[in-house]
Image 1 (spheres, rainbow, N blue to C red):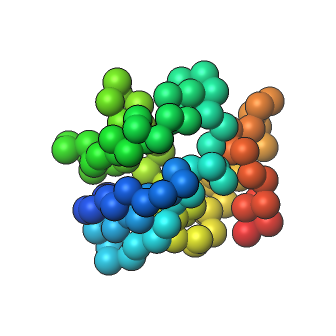
Image 2 (image 1 turned 120 degrees about the vertical axis):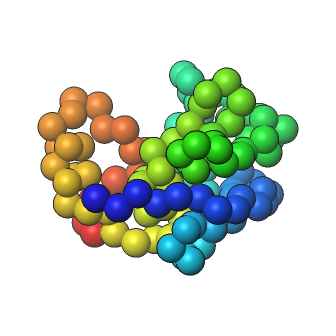
Length: 108
């Protein structure tokens, strides 16, 4: 399993981030497309909070104040558009409540 470390974040408009990864790839992460802004993710629905996105210094993952973070592999695949590995979908099929808002990626 690859672990995709962030190297740079650029905050864009409309809850989007331009992300750069350690393997040289980059892409746009559109949070509105992939997240549901409720529960622990509710603060991300405020533009001023969302704009505080940063790289966690130790693990190089996407994080916000209050230890709010996202799975680095998911962020990588969402931002770059590369297909998720099969093991992700096997895990998702076993869950009663899928973690992803958009299920279109299942066909990848």
